[in-house]
Amino acid sequence: MDILANLTLGFTTAFSLANLFYCFVGVVLGTLVGVLPGLGPVATIAMLLPVTFSFQPVTALIMLAGIFYGAQYGGSTTAILVNLPGEASSVITALDGHAMAKRGEAGKALATAAIGSFIAGTIATFVIALFAPPLAEMALKFGPAEYFSLLVLGLVVSIVLAHGSLLHALGMIFLGLLLGIVGTDVNSGAERFTFGQDWLADGVNFVVLAMGIYGLGEIINNLEKKETRDLMLKSVSGLRLSWREFKGILPSVLRGTAVGSFLGILPGGGAVLSSFASYAVEKKLSKNPIPFGEGAIEGVAGPESANNAGSQTSFIPMLTLGIPSNPTMAIMIGAMMIHSIQPGPSVLTEQPALFWGLIASMWIGNLFLIVLNLPMIGMWVKLITAPYHLLFPVIIVFCAIGVISINNTEWDVFLMAFFGFAGYLFSKLDCEPAPMLLGFILGPMMEEYLRRALLMSSGDFSVFVTRPLSATLLVVAAVAMVVVLLPAISRKREETFKE
Image 1 (cartoon, helix red, strand yellow):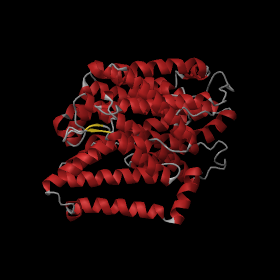
Image 2 (image 1 turned 120 degrees about the vertical axis):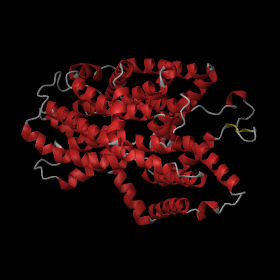
Image 3 (image 1 turned 90 degrees about the vertical axis):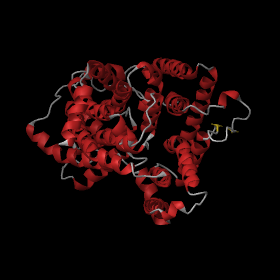
Image 4 (image 1 turned 180 degrees about the horizontal axis):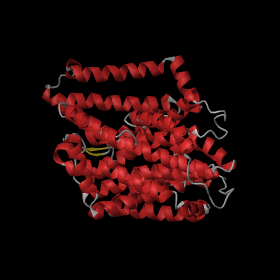
C-alpha cells in the first residue's frame, strides 16, 4: 500500500502542466540527440544544465532524465535505417536491425524497438519503485566508513566493466581522482594543484569536463570519419507487428528487461553493457532460423529492451546512495547539487515529491516516446541525412554558451577546449573516459568520508575493517580486482569486449 500511495504522489507531481511539458521537451530532445550522432546525452545534459537554473528541482530532473532515456530510442532509428548508431548502446541493434531494413522490414524493426523499449521502461519504473525505498532505508544506517568502502567498490567495478585494457581503466580512474581534488581544500583552506592560477581555486567544473570530453571530443572524432548517411529508403511503412510477431518477441523483451534492470544498477553498467549482454543471451537462447547478424528480430527486441531498462534502473544508486553508475548519472548528481539537493537516502525522506515525481515521469516519458516516435519517423529520416559539417558548428556554439554561462569566465571555454582535445586523444589511445568521470565525481566524496571516518575513530585506520559491512564491501572489491587480474579471466574479458 505504501508503494501505491507513493506512486500516487509521484503521478500527481508528474502530471502538473509544467512537468508534463518539460518531460515532453526532454524526450523529444533526447530522441533528437540519439538520431544525430556526434553529441550524446552526457554532453547535452551538461550543456542544458544552465538552462534549468530557474526551474523547480523536480522539473529540471524530469527534463534531464527524459533526455537520457529518450536518446536510447533515437539511437535505434539511425542504427536500423543507416547502420550508423546514434548512441553507443544502439551499436548492437545495428547488426540485425539494419539487416532487417535491407530486407524491407525497417518498419517492423522500428516497431519492435519502440514496443520493447516501452515495455522495458514500464517494468523498470516499477523495479525502481520496489527496490529504491528499501535500499535508501538501508543506506541511512551507513556510516562514513561504510560509504567510503562502498565508493571504493564502485570504482573497482567501474574498472572491471570498462571497455579495453584494465591498465587504461585504472589510469583513467586515477586521472579522474586527481582532477577531482584540484582547487581549495575545504578543511584546511590550502590550494591544491592550482599552480597559482586563481581561476582554478574553485576546482574544475564537472560540466566543463563532461562537455569537453564527450561533446568536443566526439565532434573531433566524427569530423575525421568518412561515413555516409545515404538512406536506402526515403519512407518507412509497416510500423506495426502482428499479434503472432508480438508474442514471438515478448520472451526476448522480458529477458532483455531483466538483464538491463540488473546491469543498470552496477557502476560502469547502464544502457551500453545491458544491450551487449542481452544480445549475447538472445544469441544463445534463440530458436530463430534466421542467424543473428542477418536480421534476427530477437537481436533487436532484446538489446533495445535492455538498454532502456538499464538507463532507467541506473537511477537507483544515484537517487538512494548518491553514487553514479555511469557518466550521465554523474551529471544528474551535479544537477541535484546545483539545485541545493544532496543526493543520497535523504532525498526519499526529505523530498518525496521529487523522488516519486521523477520515477512517475519515466513512465509518462516512455508513453510519450512510443506515441510520438513512430509517427515522427519521417522527420527523423530527414534529419539523419543532414550533413555533419553543418551540425557541428551549432553544437560547438551551444557548448561554449552553456559553459560560459556557468561562471561567466572565458577560462572555462579554454578548459573545455583542452578537455575536448584530451577526449580525442583518449579515443585514439583506446582509453574509455567513463572511469575518469566517475573518479572525478566520486573522488571528493571518498576523501570526505575517509576524513570523517578517521576523525570519528581518532585516526585509527582499522575502523574500515572492524565494521562488518565496511569490511565486507572492501573484501568484495579486493576479490573482484584479483579475479579480473587472473590471466585467464583477463584474456576472456578482453575477448568478450572485442566481440
